[in-house]
Every structure is written in C-alpha cells, then in structure tokens.
Length: 119
Image (cartoon, rainbow, N blue to C red):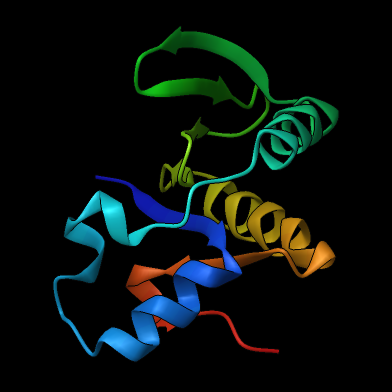
C-alpha cells in the first residue's frame, strides 16, 4: 500500500474539469505531455531535492529519496509520487509536489484527498 500524488501540466487539469468524466485519467491521451524543457526542468529539480535516479526505461525515469520512503516516476505526461506510510513520507511527497507548482505550469492532483490542490 502507498499514498499517490500526481503532478501534471495545468492544461490537463483544465481538460479534466471540462470532461466531467470519472475515467479521465485512464486514457493517457487526456494528459497533456510535458515539453522537453519542462521534462528536463522536473528532472533537474528532483535531483536538487536529493532524489536519486534509480531506473530508466520506456516508462520514464524512476527516482528514490534516500531519507524518505518516496519513489517518483517522471513520464512524458506526469510526475507520480508514491509514498510509504512510515515516518513523514506522505508529507515529503505532498510538499515536494506542491512546491513544484510554484511556476504555475504544473498542478498537483491528490486522488486520496479530493483531487486538485487549490490555493
């Protein structure tokens, strides 16, 4: 069991709200792809937050945080945090995802906590 938090482009949020679909996230084509610059930016930012690149494959880049039970998967359409239930792992994943929204290009989606983060 883990706690999941997602980061998408703001266009994905707009599209999801307009869709009124319960199955929106099941179709990958609904998710706005990151630009190459955004992808590089997110990768660089994860590394700056002490995440370590642990695996690279066709699904994307997998990172692990050495101090927390958090894994991050960066794909071409989303950044997915998966946090364990020990210590402050959920807090770490949630705060990191929230901080990544500071450019207003990205939005945080927390499926366990009602959806889109609003400020």
